[in-house]
Amino acid sequence: MTAKRSELLMPAGNLRKLKMAVLYGADAVYLGTPDMSLRTRSEFTLEEVMEGVRFCHEHGRRAYLTLNLFSHNKDIAKLDEYIRTVQKVRPDGLIVADPGIFQYVRDHAPELSLHISTQSNICSWLSVRFWRDQGADLCVLAREVSFAELREIREKCPDIKLEAFVHGAMCMTYSGRCLLSNFMAERGANQGNCANSCRWNYKLHLALKDGTVEELNITDENRDLFEFLLEEGCRPGELMPIEEDARGSYILNSKDLCLMPRLDEYLAIGIDSLKVEGRGKSEYYAAIVARAYRMAIDD
Image (tube, one colour):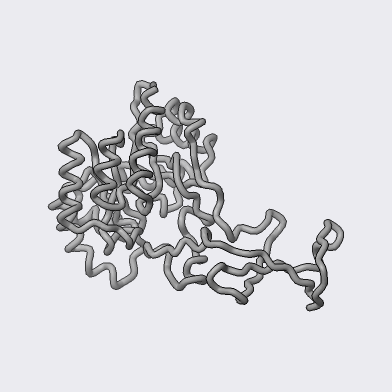
């Protein structure tokens, strides 16, 4: 343990998941409503949001609301009503990503504690200092930040809270700025409607670039003769080319994040909040992951 106790922050996709997370060890949860959160599949009603925040406070825990969409003009008209709702709910913080929304909330509800979402792609101490100077209370660092970078950011930014992901899905792009879902399903990932296209079932097809068909035997010497095609499980016969550069191809998602083996290092440098991804996961997931990390942090 360190002198500075790190917070275990768990996802809450609905009221039951929120209660599971709290009862199984979360110090805090993050939740949202469909209109203004990056999870349009959120199962919270306003009454349940208020009950959830109240439940957290009754158990000595914290609750953060999400306002982390990238706003279009049509979203701005909803902001005043949303801010009034947030003021009524009285969460412990509001998670935002859009600079315009950040400033709007600062101007209209200066009493709210503002956290900068991972969607803002904060990868350096310079970005952290920028948001600190704008009045942010906490920065959620991008998953792309290495541990060495994280340690340097902590050293150079001791006067603002830092949050880092320790468990959950890794997006194939910089912290969720993905267009694969738009291309495959016409569902905008950056508007909270990601179809998780990177997790679908695919088959790999190969063909000679000259169009001939024969038994394929790929070697380092002849691989440039071939093109690689993906077939998605629900679209038989629709072949999509895969292109790659010298570093490879990135169409599919990476292995899920699990920093349990390195948790002591994160605790040692004083990361304020350890975040678990997964508002769309099950109640069992919320409970078992919260319990596992609670035991690891307290050990």
